[in-house]
Image: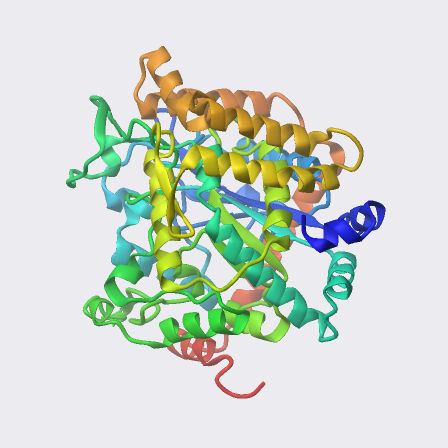
Length: 523
């Protein structure tokens, strides 16, 4: 175990870790009773998606995103997320929130409406960015949903850790360097997340739009890989397509290297995207013709994050204030949980975060980077395959053996977080060991088994789960306190959106130029 956990008293460390915070961002497609993507606008009773802190939209008007505050107790985070779901369902009419990551029945890319945020320049920028994503990669991929796990350690922990490491520099710099090391380790072992929690082994045929694929037929309506865990994290899901086309790869050696690599991509033109055009006639087709329009376009399993001010560039926020939290983006929507994620997952990920922070984390060389990428795809597409081998430190190792070794190594961390005895994190790790020993216990295997038992393809099975989750959530009312909170937030979000629209004093060309000019001069 790391010296911090070995040399510092368990009581002191446990107290310092109480300042840790977890937040969730959960995406879901709104769908019709027949399992098609909804064509209706974002429900106005939920407030403005431009300014609401907890209810917004992602790529599509139909892809709702529910965001919790950062809280200290995993159960409290889940309670808040459940309450947002209950509120949303009041405004959906006969629609449902789709229960899985891979989309419902799609009827062509044009049937996936871009998200709309109002008439302000900020709103236009968000929609143009999404139009650019659709032009670059196709709208179908953007209809995939996921869960993002946001995690931070508190100041008491960082002070204790910095003292233990004998670092006398600024706390912000120490924290950012440690977080970058944690991110590198999360990439090294990130394949474990889709193995344990992946729940998208199959997809509706409509997703591939007639394109050639080596996916196998499950039935007349469904394609799959027999041992897949997360198609969302495989070759047909989220990909850093920029890497193949333009050579961009974020550099995780340090926070400064990361910022510089993304800034270069945002400022470097790409011939492939120049062919699309930026402003074609009177309409913007993308924000720019650079390799990346903005930072968020770079798809990755984990990101360093800082809370941004209104219209502040994320890289500039990181440069100004360092890393505030880490965003793990590789969680599928769990089809067996009414809100798409469960307590077992959060407890394991909390343990994984501390494990990855405390471990040695050298810089990632080119050969290891390739191994990380290969391991991710193998675990996503073939993770339950008997005898599947991954690349660990340049040598072949069986996935099940490596997974078992990792979970064994995480046990002291779980015990530390639990305090006394075999607490909830220790018990959650034991459940993961069972999945390693018996892959049929994984959510991905359970999905396929459930489809076979019900005699249903992916879309029909997911629709049945979606309706069941809706009924379960709608059966429990909101507390009066949450009723008041959500009503106030909706009204405030609309007021704020109207203020933003009224304050616009530039045309969109000038607004966009000013946005991208941030940070170029000393500020």
